[in-house]
Amino acid sequence: MSRTIGAFTSFSVAFSMISITTALYTLFSDPFTKVGGVGIWLWFLVTPGVLLVTLVYMHLSARMPVTGYAYQWSSRLVSPHYGWATGWVAMFSFFAGTAAEAIALATVFAPEVWKHPTQHDIQLFSVAAILVAAVLNLLGVKIATWANNIGATLEFAGTVVLIAVTGIGLFFFHNKAGFSILFDHHVVGGGHLDFVIFGLAAFMPLTTLLGWEGAADLAEETKDPRRTAPRAMLRSVVAGGVLGFLGFAIFAMAIPHGTDALLGQGENPLLHIARTHYGSFAANAVIVISFAAIAAALVANLAVATRMCYSLSRDGMLPGSSWLARIGRRSKVPVNAVLVVTVLSVAVNFMSASLVNEIFAIVGLTYYLTYLFTIVGALIAHRRGTMPQAPDGYFNLGRWLMPTMLAGIAWCLIVIAFYIFPAANRSTGLTTVYVLALGALWYVAHLRRRITAGTAGVRSRVVEAPTGTTPYLGAAAATASHHEGASE
Image 1 (cartoon, rainbow, N blue to C red):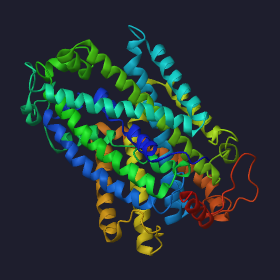
Image 2: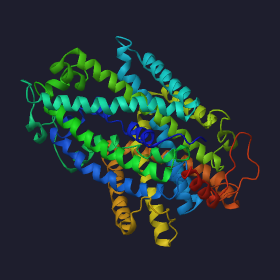
Image 3: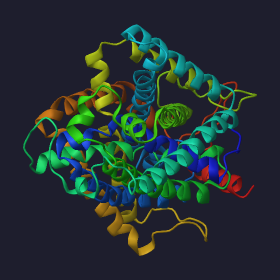
Image 4: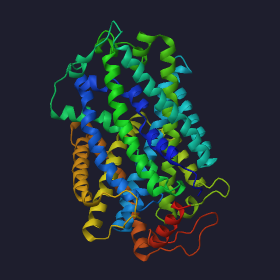
């Protein structure tokens, strides 16, 4: 692989995976249909919880800068058996997330191409977007990240400008909700407020602040990954949390004629606010920024999904591993892994609508299961005294590692509980059980024996590497090689 990713590109990947503009464009109405404007304050609850997980991931990334992050970390910290469980869940979350980004892009922007888009039109748009993202990734990580940098820069700068201009406009708008909406608990469409409803309302910031760990998944293509990836993850979460709250709060205060009227008209709420106060030019600017943001998120999602697939295959953990682990001689990317992720993402488009919704619904849950498995693995290694040390000068939680891990585990368990136990989410939990069962079936039927025999997993040695692949050297050698790569 080519080490071409620098600090800005690493941040761009992580920030694109979060994609604040996507959340503003697609989820703006969510708080007002559950708990009212007061739900916007939930960003202050969710962001610190996400930062707990981020800090642990920063600690691990500085010690084990390896593509496949959570899978590789769990395998080294606990065992390849445990690593498989973590890697399977992480890979599925990325696969589902890639397909979800493509369909979100098509659903939101197909009306800009067709006046009344049909389901076939949306599928066509989605497939075209996936193919473009795949081509960019096949051309090499430098091309893919260059395209992502453009989208992420446009998103970041455009979002900041929109928030700033709208914030200033609040002093001049005649029809606006004003500051009081942030304390309003009027629910559009009616409904009662309770603890569970507030928990479900938190899904808006929860589902937004996901994917920042993509920076760690590209470690073997990153310059000085021990330093670059941790900083990128932290900056993206902080920027996402701050811009997320400010964006939702300021645009909420700018709502004209009340939330009922806003959600009752046919136009996208964010577009309607921009068009009402600034005219069509501002609305078109929102469309361009939002398209760039979701498109960049799709390119980034496909990249990190293929790296997780490649990392598992390099260690012989997936069916067809030798084929999936091939690296293109010129592109220096896992070509066949890109093709598989592309095919699977396209296939999701042609599933039944109910099945597609079920797959997308478990993205957040599988992300948090990955977080939980990873932190528990880190806790086990810390208790055993086998947590590797990072070179001097790299991120280190030190004596704060244990309390941060315990708080992170508690946070993950709370989030997972809200993803599973409320009646509205029961099917999400059931679908996740099916996904876990599929991974367990492959493990019991085939993989367990290979891991035990030492022919699969991160502690194995590849005797004969397939043409076009890089032989995996085992944990100690890999750590040494990555340390050398970091100093290049």
